[in-house]
Length: 530
Length: 82
Image (cartoon, rainbow over all chains, first blue to last red):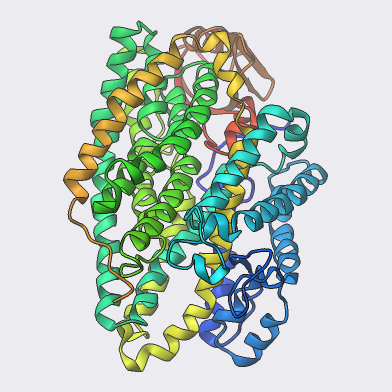
């Protein structure tokens, strides 16, 4: 039987999802960068726009233009722009073909069942596109400011968040009521792969934000660059909180109140308080627990993370912190929601909700750039993710040398690297390369750099807007498909379900909000409306 | 490293497998003891000598749906004395 072991530092570069998120993310990032040399091979990326069945005369929302290639709007080269303008709905097929080729190569390298993957991927892709389309009906997505353009007197003002909610609902219906269909999709329903790729695309977004802001003013461009830097450093505090406050707290709750065995408490403590499944697996390995312990905790984490994803964006938007402290809300999300997929998805949903809310509250006078709130949620999480290897290494040494005291056993230092989340390499590479373009040949938005920045924009937008959102949609759909709430009822989880409930709602979420407030309160998102 | 093997868990026992070697035990402590005994009896570990064994965990033990979240369980190095 073939084995899967991590022996060398480069093991898994072609066979693990984590690395494939880097390759896929950087491949499209690289295609986007070519526009800096006036080569536009990325403008085909499809994107939806709001629509209605009967657009008012002179208004917006024709179904015929509900999907368009982003190059139609953002290409720098006039010939490319004209070509992409002609694609319209066909941009969906272009996007499908391009993504199918790349994801299938990845699936083959990872030794998945390629036939089953392609079948599942195809259905998942078009189902996601269909939900994206429905979610952009102006009734769901239009705001109080622009609903009249679509001939509507009332709209739900959910912005792009409507599509995400619908994708999750459709996925959950499939995962809970059509289990045979969910099984058919399972080879392609990989929320962590999609979200890690989307996070690499988010790196493009974070690097591109100053370029976008510079189009308004050079000062605003620098202000946005400074804010993303502040988020990077403020996010580091999450690491201290997760490892030094959350973990001991949950461990004590598990041991003292619920009397769980030591190893189970350690694995559960990491799953609930650090970064979900990856922490549960890393800790299980560190304390040398039987794999079944990590597997059980992981199953629990995945379900609870989706419950958090459903509840928290609405709570943070409409109860507190709301629009008064959007980056506190984002950062708290990063600390509270486990698994990268659920956290980034919750951050994106929060981003949509809060931007729509502030625009509605101020009648359009305040427009926040999209992605900043998502970035605050993801940045916090990335810090937590990056330290899991180091944490598990320390825990392994404590367990092996002090608790179990196994004679003759040593913990290899290479464990730190094997547990390092590789996708963050793609995220930082994408972010810092666009930032280097902005501050380098882009002259930080000065007149002499604007031509290059406009060319860079043509390649960045299809990736950071089109592909990022599409991969978020795929994440929401896949999360729903793999989440079976019935598993919560399974007897063997027993006390663990209650430990999770108590620790999450009475300890982690309140503390996360307080800590986020202490370190992010007062950070302001620049107003793109001037 | 003197000896290289793959470590997995079959649901009941930890199993270490290498070239012409397969040892199983319910706990890692017992696994290490049995491994040392096997190495001594096969003549691979002379009296008074020390041997380092690298055990790389077989991640296919972890279900595929979890491997998208975490691709590594643990590797360990055990020094056995003859």
